[in-house]
Image (cartoon, rainbow, N blue to C red):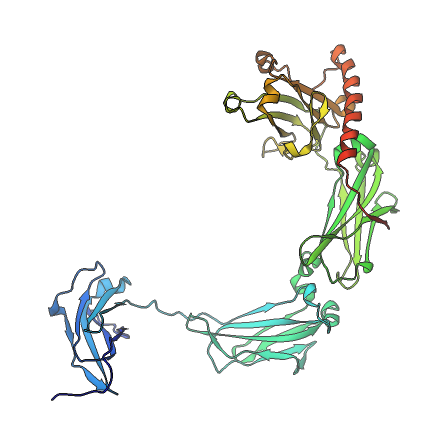
Length: 495
């Protein structure tokens, strides 16, 4: 019988046919593929194994084509190794047709294992309450459920809520189950006042009760993206001014916050006296956030006497509760002056005739607060051309001594011309809190290797001790000049 169709010739669409429920123990298993919507009825099938080798035609067959709605459909079945099939390896069904050839992999699907349903609550942060209505949304997401048997309801202080709720339809999650989410509009007033909300999915016996503090169990401001940190005074400032600047930094402040509601105070623990506090203007941190520093100044001796200071931050409309952070000098045992070594550039760098690096190594000191200033021919060098590391413990095992390093980059021509470079180190355990070591191209490397550059000033060496006074005076003048030219003007307000 000849069948005539008015449809245009078309290549087949090819689909895998995967067996299900076959728990027999035979050596082979039957798999197949389906070719649909092709014309004319001229199609041939072949099969390849996972190594792309042809399977014998004795192990596969083609069933007769069927005409449906003017197009043909045909199937092919192949017998393959059950062991290989269970290893999730693909077999390939190939269809050859005048309008185009097709190939489709046929591979066992990974069994879907349904897990127990779960519930996840997503809470807003403060900056989400930026609309004209001062509200935001809480999301309750229930996963790995069957569709049709889950209804979500909301409660506030154990009373059901019926308005301000949006709930999704079941969404396939790709694991054989479904996910449903529900969003509840909450007001800023309810959220900040720590009203308790509950999301319930009764059919699967899941519920979660929460409030603002549920998301801030250790550090309450974290859920509002606001952080407070205290920053100890820099030793360089204490050396030059005999005073210590205590800094309280408030970060991640939303731009829409009312800055006039921010209040920061510093208090001395010994007598609970509030200190005069100066607050900088608000500085942009990102497109949506800003930060501010609140600084109190005390005598350097107060800082060194292990006094404790407390910064207290209140911010109505941003922080639910005040935040307090303490600051005191680290207690790290007996002070120890550093040894200082200045290392000249390597021969490899000099041969390149470009930039060369001088290294100042500061070792065996305690505590870890110090500063470094480089001089070139007794003139201060800009901080932009050298890098100084933070203090690092010499050993991770019961170590109370630190080391640090500073690297200065200079032109090779300046070094070769005989310029002198000096590493000035400040530390509280040094006589006059200061020492320095100088190197140039004529420095005797043999003397360097014998420890000539040891930066500890020996009190028995009268000549070097006398020279230290001159060094100190020179450095203070030069360092102050350097600070003067690099200072920036900051608009401040006095608290």
